[in-house]
Every structure is written in structure tokens, then in C-alpha cells.
Image (cartoon, rainbow, N blue to C red; front, side):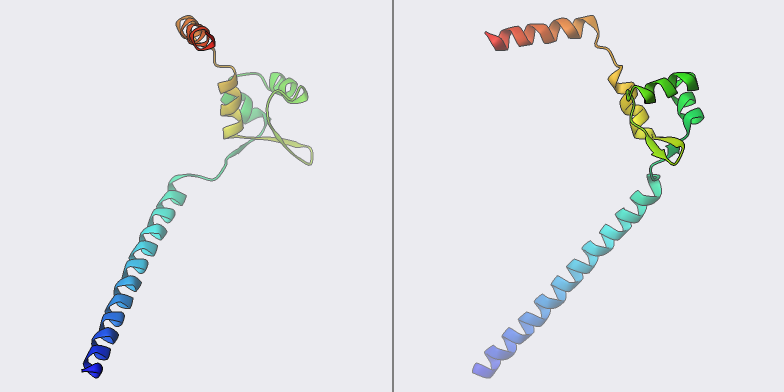
Length: 116
């Protein structure tokens, strides 16, 4: 009987080990698939020179040079070349976003109520 119990336990452990291995393998395969899909769908950071960045922002290159000298926009300097990432350009545009009058009034009222 002890031998039968031992065989049952060994069979159970083997089946459990096989199930766990298959589950991990399936999860790992899914992670690899999703990672390879994500990496092919999202391009790496694109870098823009002054001319391309100015076109992206719809401003003159001289204006962009002025913004970099004032440190009003993030940039990367490689040797003498000034580069911008798309995210940095988007962040700069977002900083200039203005609220509507109705949003300003609503936020003012909320702050007044919370302060009271």
C-alpha cells in the first residue's frame, strides 16, 4: 500500500510539474507575442532637427532657436546639432494649452468651496 501511495504521489507531482511548465510556457509565449507586436507598432523615439521641429510646431526656426536659448523647450545637444524628441515637442505644445473661461470659473468655484 505504501508503494501504491508513493506511486500516486509521484504521478501527481509529474502531472503538476507538466501542467505548470505548460502554463508558464504559454504565458511566456503570449508575453513574447505581445512584446514583439508592441515593438513593431510603436516606433522608437523619433528625433527632429531644428528645421523639422520648427515645421512640427508650425513656427520659424529662428523662434525655435530662441526657445532653446531661453531653455523654454527641452532639447538634446549632440556636438553642434540640436535635436528634439516628438514627446518633448508635444510637451511644449501642451504647456501652452489654455483653459476655457467656463473651466476657469468652475475650478475657481471648486477651490473656494474646498477652502471653506
